[in-house]
Amino acid sequence: MLKITDKVDLKDIYDFQLSFKTPYFFSVNFEEWKKSFERDIDGEGRELFNELFVKAVYDNDKLVGFVQYGKTAFGFDNKGEISDEISYPVIRNLFFKEDRADAGELLLNDAMKNLGTDERVYAFFHYFGMSCFARHGKLFENHAHIDSLLKENGFEVEHENVYYSSVLVESENSDVVIKANDLTKGNQQYIDFKIDGNQVGGCEVHYLSDTTAYLRWIYVNGDIVGKGIGTKCMTALKSFLFEKGIRRFDTDTAINNTVAQHYYEKNSFVREGVTRSYFKI
Image (cartoon, rainbow, N blue to C red):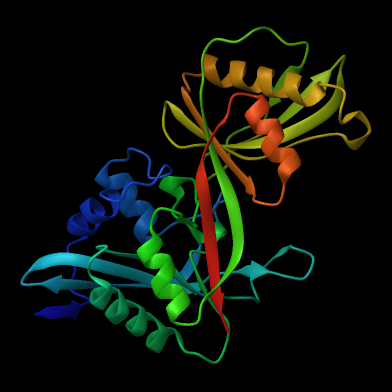
């Protein structure tokens, strides 16, 4: 008999979530996971949520699914700037066994009832994912049963991204000089790329462990695009990270950004699959 409850053992949730095969569910200990799950921050140290709730479904005392939902602590205005005056209702995590759609229905209905239906509700909102997983909040494509449940209940796909991963090895020298800024409160680092003392681009890296990092974004100046500078910057960045002990380097980009996809694949990133975020009006 199915039973939904807010009396959950977080260690059970931790084990359950990591049992799902997802490329950005990195190896993380329970304490690191718990910190991200309960009271998470973004790269600049802002708390991600004003409130978060967790419900779990058990069948004869065996965990078969859980949901985490709440209201964000901020949002983004029309210019893409962060605003404390904006808050989103978000289903942050929703995972259930592939053969237990009944558990998924219970969890989703509970989340929607408590979040309210008078405004847009988001599911798997990218920015508000868990920090221990690089805040990659989207749903990976191999969780088709979760995708189906959301769509059957009126959710639409909002964004699709392609996820990439690269194994770092010692690389050749580059004439690009790295200028790394101090780490932020969220364990991220802004990095400038320079040639002959002139800045030619930059990036932001999120350090997930002593050996794993995530590229949040990278750019080169528009007037030098197509001249091979981007590849030189990536070579210098990978060399810099390798010297710091990083061996796995991941990133993602929009599914319609074929230029970025070509860039990553040219620079030895392997395409892992597609991730999706959702909304319901």
